[in-house]
Figure 1 (cartoon, rainbow, N blue to C red):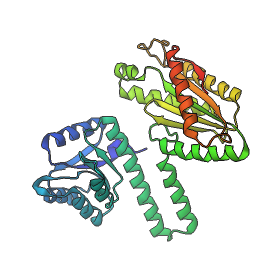
Figure 2: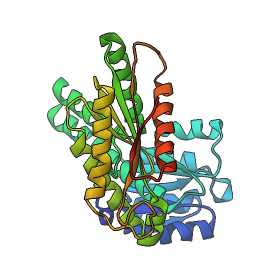
Figure 3: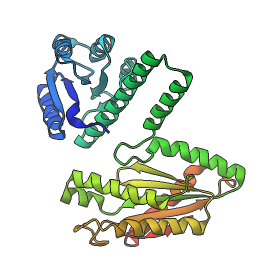
Length: 323
């Protein structure tokens, strides 16, 4: 993952207060802001002089300038990571923005964690792209090199930057693949949904840095429990996780779900603001779905999710079967 102090960022934003807020946010996250511009001329001047690695570009700039066009000029000059900032998420605007091939866009207003995660992923992908292009120039990119590079980029696209687990996109791909396999082989697919109990209270009490560390440690427990090469562990979003267990019975799925609950409790992360335990705990809902009976994996996911909420209503810190 990118070391924040290595990244030089140019902020192009036409609203002075918003620009200053972004600069303060970035400085607090450890990034170096090399300049702030509000129109085409000042943005291009700073871009040429400061040579930033990443540009946060508002789509609408001062003096009627178009941020998408300015970004295109920058990209034509040299390799640079572009993240668009916009309060306009309509399809037409986003379609025009995508013509510049930005690494991301953020719809305003946005939070510090969203900004940090988006920058980290964008910089990592940009650097990987540059490495691949350099490899192609130096070695004339043999077919094997290109395949490996594409696989590396594909892996990055389905990986959660905080935990290293599969992200939501990776989950969707894995669920579709394993559901089809289960239907062909007439084998059950275990699905476990996991949620960290009272995580907002933990974040509020101990801070986001501790919260991020907590999520990483919970993710490590899930990886340690779901150890088969076919098992898939994903970060579903926020403090929620999903485990897919191909060819796993009701009893096998239950055993893994209970081990997850016990494993998180056993690492004993202090949580003085939970009514479930004095340490961080998780709740889990699980099912062993029958893909050969139905073509709808979303129904199985809803069953696991309903079981998760039942576990929470029953007092948290437990695993409950669904279906």
